[in-house]
Length: 51
Image: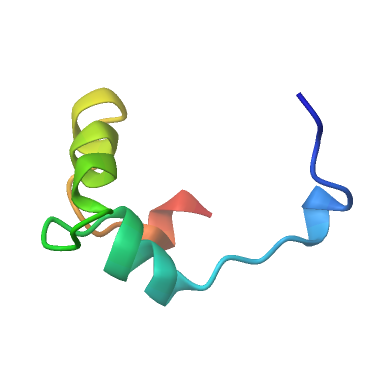
């Protein structure tokens, strides 16, 4: 697997995480939200604690 060049400089907009990755209502993101809650035990929107 290739690594992201300069990964230490990567920035992810919190809105993208909240509106897509952790959203129960986003058509494509809701399956990911279920995964994160189930396997990583994340209780919904917790972006601030991921950093």
